[in-house]
Length: 142
Image (cartoon, rainbow, N blue to C red):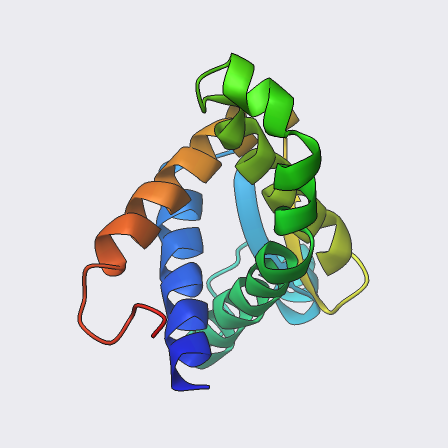
């Protein structure tokens, strides 16, 4: 259970870095959207709410990666072998896009402007951060 919480924290951190680097990706809540409409800025949201929003999207992303990704990887194994593993980036982008779609049913929304470029670049950023964070003792599954 502790490993899952660490993975959610890593996913939240990776999503924050990806939204910080890519302008086509954003995480917002209903409260920040209404504050943005009233004030014209998103600075009215409190820091704890923003952190919880990233952790919530990180939780959704972790669940999608735990349940959907293994099936998609198995079904796309021939294409992955043909592309020497590069199709894995497309699979990661599709999982990110599925997370964005699932988040439309929650109060916290992940929006991705362009599937191809933004989602591909975000999946590369998230994969690199997850790989580096996986080197931290205790972050690996035992």
